[in-house]
Image (cartoon, rainbow, N blue to C red; front, top):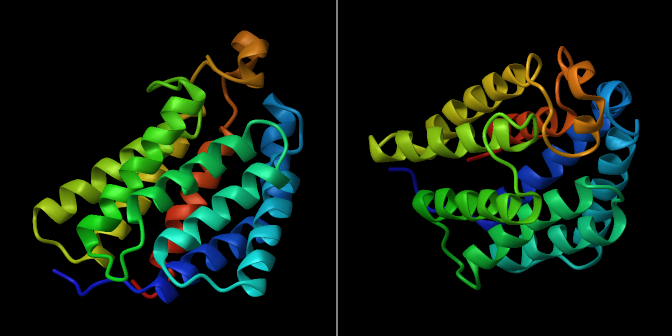
Length: 211
């Protein structure tokens, strides 16, 4: 099993995710224009830029402090459903990590699942609702399965990335049952969910970081 994950590596992940969101802002907004308010990309980009600025201003000493700061920044700066959902995800991860200086691969997987639990509690999403859950839940399951087989964290994150991408793609034919997209009924079919797309970026960012 891989060595413990440092707070610096976790911060690198957050910053890489912010870059991914910025680079895909227009694409995310285009996806949201089809089934939402056409503001998901701009909202997430604004929120992640604010999160990075907050990290620059006060570098976090622990993983818990890092994710708590990111989560609180997203909740306070991002409108719509994205801020509360992604903010809660990071906040729950922060709570799971606590004040520990040493984050093991299992600690990371446990925190990721705690983040998923926060998304479910906040958004009441279930499998097949055409939401970020449909990419996040398979990713969490894939990481757990990889670690159970004694795979290194890096390999587990690649499995999680692939599962998130498959979950993202699977949202396209779904009928939306939650959020703004659900108002469209059958017209929501055939469009990729922007929240699930952002989750796929989050896991892609993890594989590009130094885990």
